[in-house]
Image 1 (cartoon, rainbow, N blue to C red):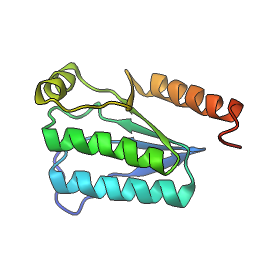
Image 2: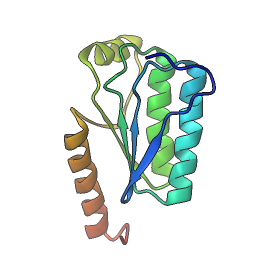
Image 3: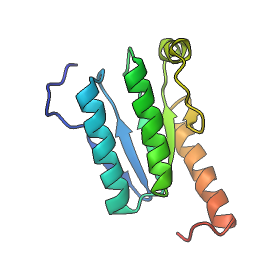
Length: 133
C-alpha cells in the first residue's frame, strides 16, 4: 500500500496505551509527521505506553531507524514507555548493518507480547510508586 504526502498514520487510544500500526513503508516526511502526531497524542492523552507495530515495514533506512528510536526516547521523556513490535528479520538485519542503535527501546515479537510487556512495565512503575493509575 502506498500513501501520498499528507497522509497521517492513525493513533488509537486503548486505556492508558496508544496503538500505532504502520501499514505501509514510510518515507521521511511521513515518519516526521508520525513522530510529531504521536508525541502530541502522548501529551494530550497522558498515555503511559505506546505500542508501535512495524510488522508491515519491508524496508528501513538509517533515517527511519533513527526515527523509531527517537520516538521511543521522546515518548519516555513525556512519561510513556514504547514497545516496538513485529519487526521482520530483514528489518532487524538492516538496522544492525546500518549501525542504528535501538538502545533503550523495548521490543516484542507481536502485538500480544508487546501489550503484555507494556503491562508488566506499567505494573512495575505502579509498584515502585512512579505512577498512580
